[in-house]
Length: 145
Image (cartoon, rainbow, N blue to C red; front, side, top):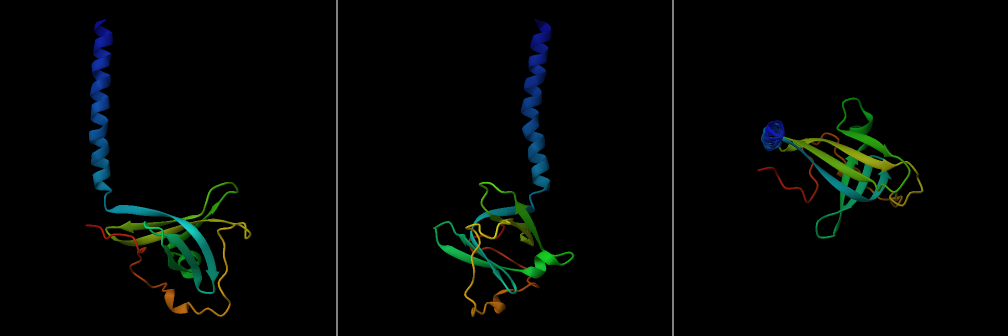
């Protein structure tokens, strides 16, 4: 009986101590965070991807991701292929110490997937793609306090 009481006391002490250590680890990494955004449509363009997404009030917004971010060494973006199934494409934007770090674009490879769209041929969106941009925020992002 004493052994059971002792083991119970040790288990209670361990369980109550775990959150204290977890908060300590989280506090050290608090300068790095990310935002996940479900994608409405992805439009390939000659300079990059035009990504349509919804903000918190259901308005469709657009962001422009240059190909240079994804297809150069040391670029600021990664493309992750989603396997066939029900997963819908999404975008993850990473920030470190409140400034843009990099993006990950999770896409479906099937060109006939409903997440892919096409831009009108004579559209000129060249000035919206800036591969040298130091800061990148989605419209509904809030700056880190």
